[in-house]
Length: 210
Ligand SMILES: [Zn+2]
Image 1 (tube, rainbow, N blue to C red):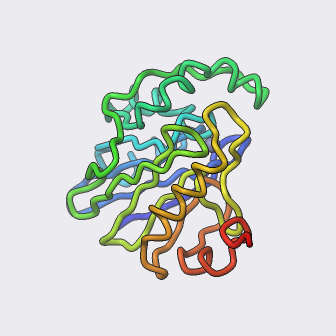
Image 2 (image 1 turned 90 degrees about the horizontal axis):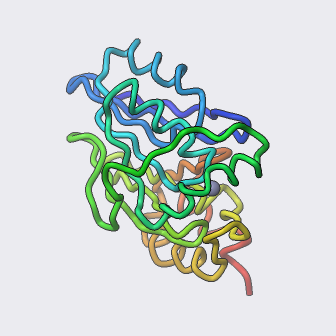
């Protein structure tokens, strides 16, 4: 198995390449930027890109998806509740102060409960609205890993002050979906260092308000 996570773009979104050498296949999660670098890595490994998975439609996570699709032919998967945010790409680019990337509607909506990923390393889609209405987390049970997008971070949670954000809803999503996972589950957030469900359950200040 190949699992490589590297921050891309000015907002340093964690982009992940997950590959199965035996099957010759790979997926990419959150190709926000630096698409040539991501593409070169997939090519060097000799893998065929099967899916482009996007945890939510913020520019730093989705910005390179169309470029990567054009290079590889892989479909883009993103929850349909983030379509309004995709349509706001010019505004999102202005927030960050970068040129707006070309974007496109997803080929498939990442619906709650759907199985995506690789045959030997499948992931269950957890719809976790709150950071955005279409935010999802991807739980790779066989790998004991959850990709948390901008919903849960080490010691923090996603911001809810942007369009589609809802502070009550993000806490509800984290408590009902992510905290339902085993303590030993590794959490790979959309930004910053990895953590575990157990560590966040015990010490994340946003989840322990009394
Ligand atoms: Zn975000």
